[in-house]
Length: 466
Image: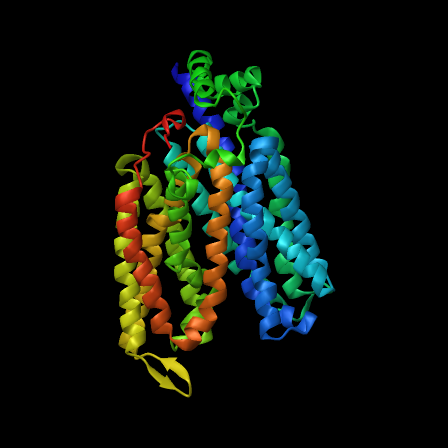
């Protein structure tokens, strides 16, 4: 392949990654937007604490089912078509959440938005893995995590400036309650995502699975050139079963634990433990957490913003090293680092004092907690944050990728929901106890990765076994 073709190749791959990861941006924005709208939701729909908790958490219900059905639909409709459907759901969910005056309609729209989040979370990294060369696949897929955190941070920034312009989230801005603008603003990137998806090709692996080989060859030629494209087509064809197209039952195999393939269990391990270490407690309840630890509301919000910025910076470290040192070493480093920093937070919280029923830390303990929390975020976003999505997108054989992603995405968002819903009760019982649990899970994850996860760095997708 000549230099010009090589540049055109990477230029096209870069454009595909840029479009696909808009789904990650929307994933992050939809997850973070609710942080600034809770007062508005309570006022608009007369919600008590339980009602607010259900309204906020309903997004995650949609995520669970969106992730599951996206994986199976991607095998029947195609990766690109399901992402288009997700873009429509993002757009519709944002508009209806921003305009709904009936609580039931709002919750339905939030679940619909969650289905889009769940679909984008599994399909964007899988699609990128299926078009990117093995030598840069990890870096390209890691961009998804950067976009997720950028979306979260963008939601925090939009919420801040909208509330500031209106004076409060419940005040009017342009004749509309300010909190509604926080949802409506998502419609713009959702529309861009939808339109952009009409300008990128379908996954060649999906096209081969559907026996649309001439179309697959055209895509592969545009990515790798005529000679390499033809060779790659033959490799992809050989990786699929000759007796049937991909289906959900492909995740089962004789001799597997509970009849499920070992590689699917490895994916489930990654999906579930990414949540059991408690990272989304920082993202969903950051302000609440730090106020529980004795910080003022303004200080708590500032810590949240710092955590977001640190997260983005950490992902750039991953981009620089993931295709050099590999996925498994990063996971092991992350598990060890998270365990140490989580137990540092446990120490700080355990030494605090209750004043009028509120945990209060000394300045020294408060600094330990803040530094440990930000180091924890760094370790997560250098390792488990992006690497879990990288591996789920690439670790499965072509025949079972869509089905395995359906199962693992379902488990990942299910664990996310459980952690998000249990944290308030755990924190009320004991903030120290909650973080001890997350720390123990980080320790366990180290040994599970060491035993059950196999390196995928530099391997072609057609070489994946399981």
